[in-house]
Length: 140
Picture 1 (cartoon, rainbow, N blue to C red):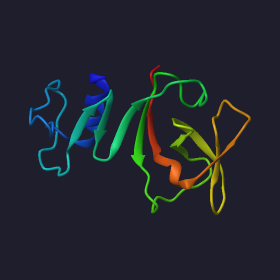
Picture 2 (cartoon, rainbow, N blue to C red; picture 1 turned 135 degrees about the horizontal axis):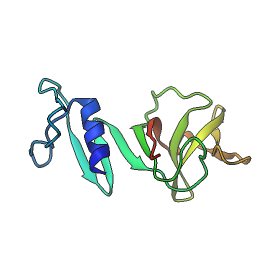
Picture 3 (cartoon, one colour; picture 1 turned 180 degrees about the horizontal axis):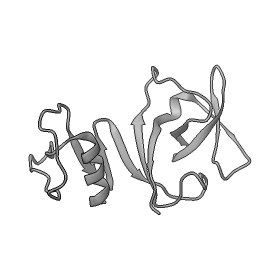
Picture 4 (cartoon, rainbow, N blue to C red; picture 1 turned 120 degrees about the horizontal axis):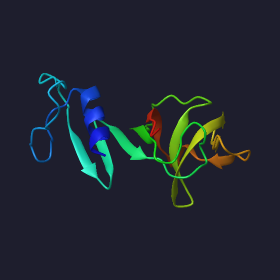
């Protein structure tokens, strides 16, 4: 997880933990920008929240081959103002489980989603969306 955190912090230009105030120790060739505002991150339940992006490990096989178990997903929070389109990968809660699947079709009151490794789509309410996957760090 340390290398993922370092990579995420490198991309953001952040160099200080907002909770502890400790400076992040990085290899000499990594340069952080001290001028960047909003460089806050938190480590919580094996996820790192970095400037409104959650870094989370993928589990399961439903999104293979796009996302494999162990890959790291960068997930931005969803708001009503977030534009959605078919083909986007979203995180949502269905029957008490958090799932990450691709939007198959959009309708006025719901959307359908399915894993890339599935032929079956499911109806999901827009209110169930937690976030939009904006990046994937591949494990292999």
